[in-house]
Length: 148
Image 1 (cartoon, rainbow, N blue to C red):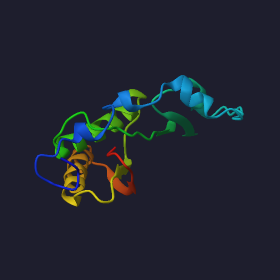
Image 2 (image 1 turned 180 degrees about the horizontal axis):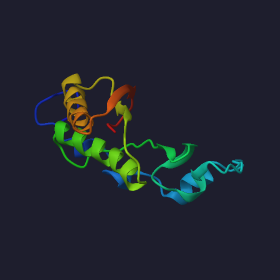
Image 3 (image 1 turned 90 degrees about the vertical axis):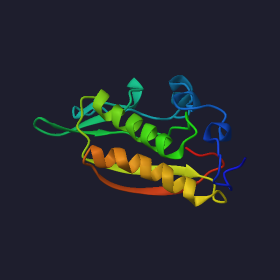
Image 4 (image 1 turned 90 degrees about the horizontal axis):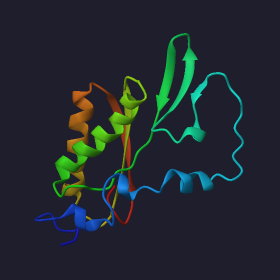
């Protein structure tokens, strides 16, 4: 059953790999930036070259900005649960770097001709975790062949 129907949709059947298994290995991602020149900056605490979950930039004495972006393909079939898992996974990248999330930009990729009720449930699940974490949120939905 495709995403254009809302009953009995299996999100895991809409993608080739679930979760982090859908990501390119870090060594391949690094090859996509062949001309990147690292500019020395004493405030850059964690940069591109470490392939960490997030970058960290010192913005003041004892204060640093932790930035990350994540895409996560479905590991489960329930849209609400998938949204919760994706949001929790993204938040964990900030926590893993010792940060405290304050804001979030929810980015979702979804087929344009799919049932919007499915997307609404994914977003409800993700926003439930953002609300639980007491974050200020905004976001954007992008067209994509597969949900992520």
